[in-house]
Length: 235
Image (tube, rainbow, N blue to C red; front, top):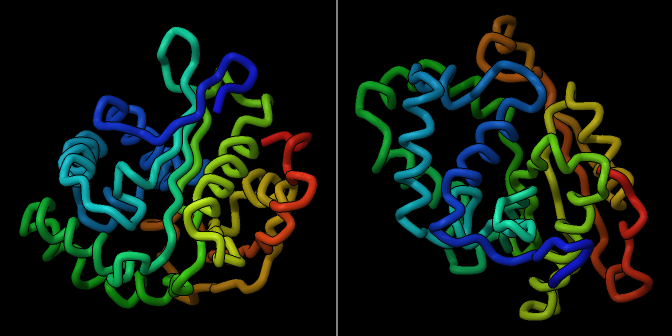
């Protein structure tokens, strides 16, 4: 799809640097806390190296899959924004298992050991993905393209493309940290609605995660076959 001199397309290996930026900025959720670094005890630069290697494995069906990413490309071939979405369990394996396998394969063994004492914290904030639904995992728009409704356009276009191949999908979900008010408001503009909240009682959780709450938001997809929601929204 081409709109406003931007081309929307599925990501490729050539986009890997921007995809790493997308994962890192989305994980930070508007803070300085990068969960990969805090949970596994590795630097942001080490995280970048590991994310590149995980993406390069080209595993399909989770947030660390190149095939999950949809990007907006400018006329000069730079990437303006990216969204990662997948159909949960489409290949028969939960996305959490696929991501876990990638982490275990790529991360240093000592990093995996450092994360073990934090398992209870991670589990307490975990929200299960519902099978046979579209999951919006990561969204990032470069600063120079914010205020152009780009995220909502990308999300709508990616969902519509997925529905062309899997027309029986009726719901899309996104998980967002509770402190990320701008993202919550933006998702509400593109017809996501809050359905549940998880809150941690662990006292030092903010040393490891951007927030002690995580919100699950849901969007009914049947409306996408009507007037095309989100076209006038600003993300």
